[in-house]
Length: 541
Image (cartoon, rainbow, N blue to C red; front, top):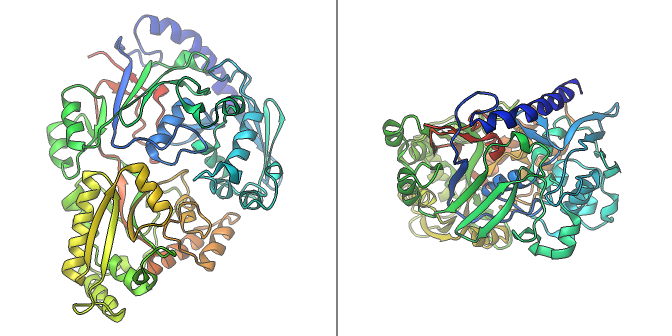
């Protein structure tokens, strides 16, 4: 509470002083000279899924939502919790009831006060089966009381363990104590939603002409598959300390074209084309960055009803996993400091120790031999070759990886692997409906704790696209929520996943990107990769 009060006083003081300093064209804290053009333009390769907090399901969309909306807590440059709409929280003795105190000054972009009722509405909207949110399962991850029964439709949404006691007091009741619960409140699916706007406009409420938001920016333009613009929100409670006036997204599907346009001065940020990191870092050492991030690149193996019969055989799944040379992928194809992955959870995860799973402790030559033995035992070989299709969303990087893996499978196992690429939203639908054989996956932690990865292999997870179900895993996950030391549970889960191979972890990401020297305030040390445009600014050359 003392920390939060200091933060409020500091913000108030800075709000007064910043207006004077900004008028003089300098940063209120650092004193750096600012450019008159405070517009940040960056590239994404795909159209985002949505800007609705309870509907969005991708990284690009989540970044937009963090600008347009604000939840109970935010993160600082190092990933630590800092006040958002909530100033503080208190708990009962057994930490099953959290009471959040909200700031009086929070406002929606239409001038209405942001209330605890807006959070209650949003969380119940997320859990409501009628919303059909792909992130509905996150209510279960948060361990909210009655979440599972509400999501299944067995009890009414009104029974969800969240309640607005007053306009500035939000009470959340958990099914059981969970030490990392506050970390989950920085996720976009928990952000408030304006019930009156949704009631008035239905699904169209997120269009620029209708949207009402409570973050540092408002949505002013959206041309699907082309551009999106968000501009400073004068109603935001901390607008006095926002410097970046406008944020523009340009969608460019070709990473090489995006780089060419970046170098021509069109963009402030873009990705590093696959395989070009070392050369680009040498040529542009002050603009190229690569930091570990809380993300894993993997392949889903469809074990569901629409999946091929071959993938229901553990030996086949193991063979496909063992035959992939992760070192070649990260060293020869990606070349940006990525880490070979044999567990789903990255080493960068707070409080997590990577276990030595069987596939990781032998040489690649030994893995290749084992893979051939497993596939042969499953009945596949020259006389009966395995045929499989790899599905990925359109991207030159994903294509290169798919080509490399298909060649590894062909050369080592005789597997005939074809490839299919789809536009992002179509790909998500196809994968989510289980109409694939092997599909590319990428997961970035929703909060910095191992369960954000391992919950994906829970039978009921909304993103368990492999349709993997294991009673021991489900029980270990449930027990870990109340454990003072969940590491043994996480170790066992990783061992089971590595053995059962419902998914193949391939590498752990780094944030390989170009960023103009003039852009300051980027949170390079935040392994979750969560950034807020309100913390960015552009300095004069």
